[in-house]
Amino acid sequence: MNTLAIDTSTRTLSLALAIDGKCVSYRNFVLNRRMADAIVPHITAFLRRRGLGLDDIGAVVAGRGPGSFTSLRVGVATVKGLCFGRDIPVAGIPSPDAVAAAVAATLGKTDPKLCVISDARRGLLYAATYRIEEGRPLAAGSCQLLPWKELRRQLTKPVVFAGDGVTLHREDIVKAFGPDAALTDPKFVTPQARYLLPAGLAAIKDGRAADAATLEPLYLYAEDCQVRP
Image (cartoon, rainbow, N blue to C red; front, side):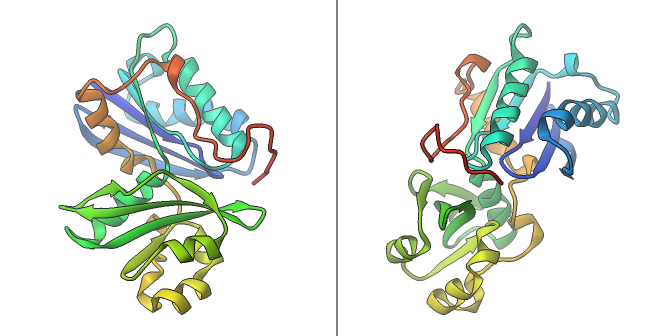
């Protein structure tokens, strides 16, 4: 089965393709134009490189956010358009899980707590905390929307941080948790679709995937709040 993974929670459009459960291709595109104008052409070209078209996709793994309102809406709408009428299952995965999976795959089997943070604007962060066991990230709660000071009060050493919020709060992280707590490797900054695949493929295999009608973005701000990237 051909499985397409997609994340649009940031300005980066991230795509990955798995064939029979193995990731065979991935690309990340930093977009200089509107996501709505770019997403379908990029997906089409990405698949064409493997000799595939949209009708060859048998399942979709989609990053649900949180993140950019507009980009998430466009991404979810695109997934719905791809899946409707084709009876394609879709697994929605929180986007921070991709960053957590990248960290877990790199750091080893057992490490300190991990907190993935991203800039939510207005002085707030999106934050998701994990523990890493046997090389896999296990969520230690739901994603939160909160200021750094509140997040700092919730966490204790040892903990490491990843995500684009690390750049924003690097000095705070180092001061509170030490110089090794801030992870700055590029693959730990934005969610990459290839790291959504393991959780998404497992959900599809276990029957936990859904149809496109039930896929919704993960918004932590009020729905009428307009915060632009």
